[in-house]
Image 1 (tube, rainbow, N blue to C red):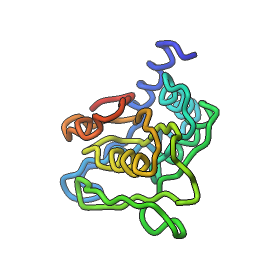
Image 2: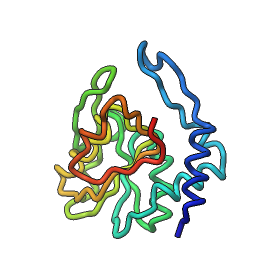
Image 3: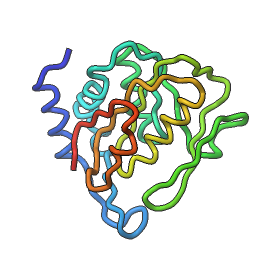
Image 4: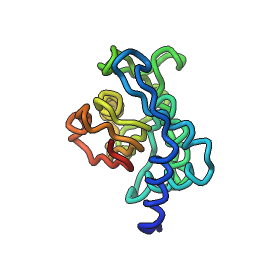
Length: 179
C-alpha cells in the first residue's frame, strides 16, 4: 500500500521530468512529453504505482495508443490483471470495433480487436495526458459499447484549461498532476 510520500515522489518526478513542447503537433498546442518520466526507472515505478492506487476488482486495464501502453502494462501488472492495447485506426487486423472522435487538433479513430470479449469485464482506462478528454472518453465509450464496465480512468497529467474532465463525467477520473 502506498503512503503519501510515494504519491509525493510520483508528483515530484512528473513535475521535474515532463518536457513541454509548444506548437506540437500543430501550432497552438502545448504538448506534455512524458518520455523523460518513463526513461527514469524510479519515476516510472512511482507513477505506475500511483495510477493503480485505489483501483480494486479490475479485470482488464485498457492502455491507449501509444504512451498509455507503457503505463497500462505496468498498472495491469500492479493490479494482477490483463492489459488491452487500444490502438489507432489501421494498426490491428480486422475485424475490429471502432470509435471516431474529435481531438483538439483534428479527428481520430480508436480500435480494439473483436477477438477479446469485453462483456461484463471491469475495465480501468489508462492514458498519459488528459487534454480535451476526447481520447479517454472515446476509449471508455468504445469499450462500454462492447459491454465492458468502466470502473474508472487514470492519467498522469491533466491540462485543466482544456476542460477534458467534463467529457469524462460518467466514471471516476484520477490524475497525478493538474496543470
